Image 1 (cartoon, rainbow, N blue to C red):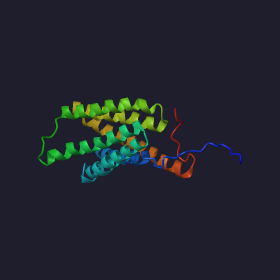
Image 2 (cartoon, rainbow, N blue to C red):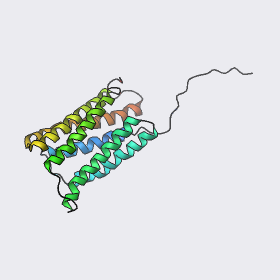
Image 3 (cartoon, rainbow, N blue to C red):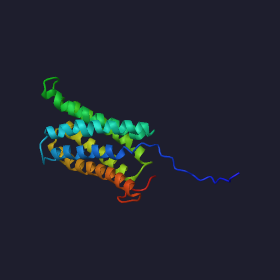
Image 4 (cartoon, helix red, strand yellow):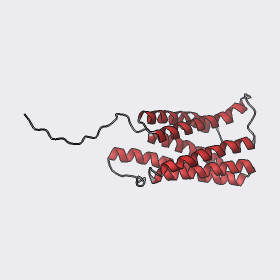
Length: 197
């Protein structure tokens, strides 16, 4: 009989990490929309298309893959924010096509506030993850609050300030997504995302 040695083996599930896709989709679309909120560019078909196909569909796909990986947080976050982008585009496009009346400032305030509440609650999940995700969700909570206030108060200065803050939020999501890719490819920390709690 030949003696055998038991050694631990890392078992991979064979499914790629969808988080970089979801983070980059969210981040790039957020940066572009907030370029418009800050007054650098206009809200154009470019932003709407990004909202449908990258911020929307790509995040939903990332969320579905997270479900396959048994990651409830990733599923909830990416799928929710993917459909956020699709709903936001709908709120812009449907009135312009004559399908529905343009939403009132009060209804947009409620829409943005409920997304702010959702994001704030999801932020607590990041406390068991890494510092980079904590920053993404923390800054996104602030962004939704600022946008809700700008709609509720009709204050253009708050709206413009939200644009600057949103650019930072989106850039942090891009950074976190690319850090995940590069750290995995190189097998070491190329871009730090902070320790896991």
